[in-house]
Length: 206
Image (cartoon, rainbow, N blue to C red; front, top):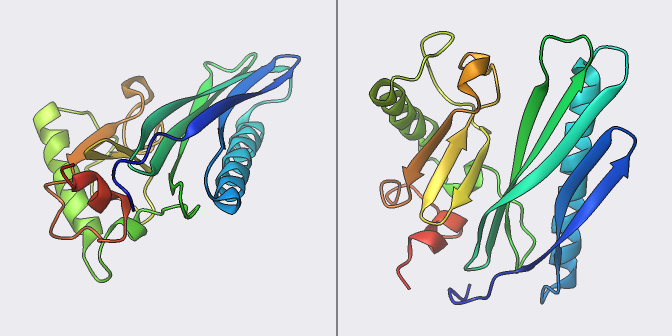
């Protein structure tokens, strides 16, 4: 992978209907049309997944829904983005927000899972969990119960030279905490990161 690769072009699409406004990204002009198609189809599916998830928990009535996105990384051929969806239906006590993320190789179209970032057989769950447990203590983050470990497929995104592990609302913390985010330097993870994954690319000084 060429480390000096230019950022991918990003277009904003909008779903707009009564009480619903959702914006989400689509990549354009990639050298590999198949990769572009696969990444964009996955992004569209993720947006629909968030909509469906909201419909599953909202009470009957008129639901107000808003969605947006944040690009976390768009360099060195690695595109990482978070999609958020907020919905509220009267008379619920408060609205609910869900967050979903995608990290992809813009040359091949590969969508990375957390497992893909690390060497086969490495105990990445323990390494990440130990780091997060330490951050919880140092940052004095209130948890619903003592933190044990992340899921093998825990939510994440890549932001420059950091892997950011995050949790959904209520997953490990009270609602008022928001989304607990845990940035971990790629250099701290170098012994276990896969040479074929995005963390290896981001850890290279160039």
